[in-house]
Length: 330
Image 1 (cartoon, helix red, strand yellow):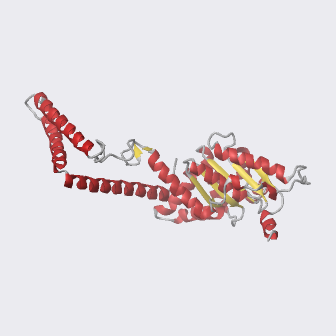
Image 2 (cartoon, rainbow, N blue to C red):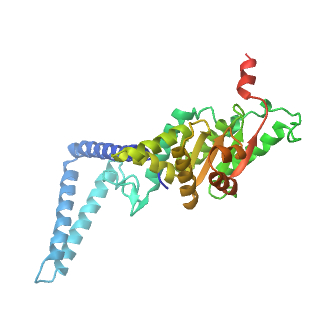
Image 3 (cartoon, rainbow, N blue to C red):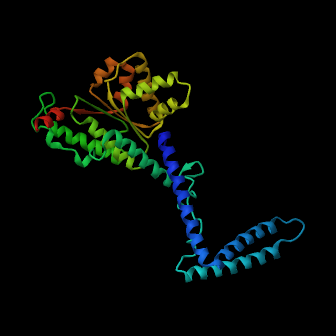
């Protein structure tokens, strides 16, 4: 899983801020208790001293540290029992004044070994959804708000089935793709159809569901993606490289509006690199486009069209422009 570096940075900052705030709160609470119970402050000081003594005795050269260790352990146990009694009389738990981490798995570092801890992953997910929300208005775009009544029940002349019947199938595929992400039998989707038929809406629904499940998701228009690749080609700093790296490495890339950009030889090369790299890595991609697969072949290259046709499941959108239907209602 590869989150956007900016997402990871903000999540790590939030984790560190929470750790500092918790440590400050515990220290304030500890000092309040110490002020009214000086003996408790003395006990904690002695406990720290006995721990230092245990370590010193264990490292001592030329003599048996056993008796000294046993004596120190006994003193330490007596102090802990006295401390527990005082805390109990104050109605406090035995560990209430200790600097215990909120996450026992990683100790509030966000990592255990080279693996991201669930606590940091959860914060990354929150930050990622915040980014997606600013782009997609995720408060409105969810599968349960998808309206089927905008699609006609009359058979379409080119297919013999109605737009509504077709969209019921499309919606079912998109919901299962998102809900069973990584386990659904379609790894990649190509949403094809004229403007105003719900491609971007369903892409946003997929982004939301997959992101909320804790996967790294990047959503961007084809024009922006190819611009970042062009900037990266000539950039000397790492920022542009991070931008393109997140397109190549995220769990799910949603590439919106393919075909609306100015198609050049560089764009063709960047698209092939993007598609091929993600397929080779076994990563998932959803592409939405006003183009058919035949038009993709003519506009880009047969090689790109072949990769898309062979590795992407095409979902066809047809019917009346929903934007116009909504406009005519008012």
